[in-house]
Structures are given as structure tokens and as C-alpha cells.
Length: 54
Image (cartoon, rainbow, N blue to C red; front, top):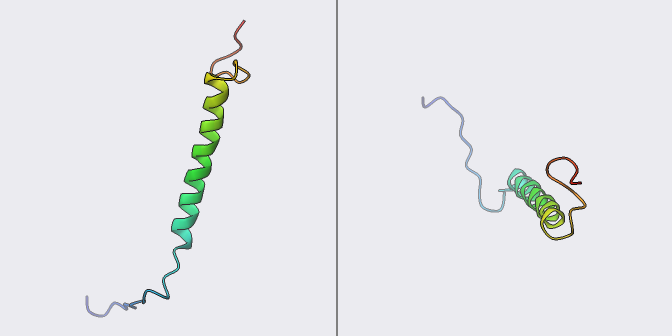
């Protein structure tokens, strides 16, 4: 297995774009869910989880 190519990168060359993208997407999902739960729990039911409340 010594024939595999390996390249060691330094601290300055490391660019975690994928990790930053995942964190951003996760944060946006949390914000959307928080806004949705605000309307469901506190704002008088403009949005409903199941059907229409009569």
C-alpha cells in the first residue's frame, strides 16, 4: 500500500468550504423551524401542523 499518493497540506492551505456550507445549511434549517414553531405556538395559529382548526 505504499504506492498510494499522499499529499500533506499545511494549515494555510486548508480551506473548509464544504464544512462552512453544511454549517450554513444547518443554521438556516434551524432558523426556518424556529420561525415555524413561533407561529404554531405563540402567534395564534396562522400556520397549523395538521389541517384547519375550526
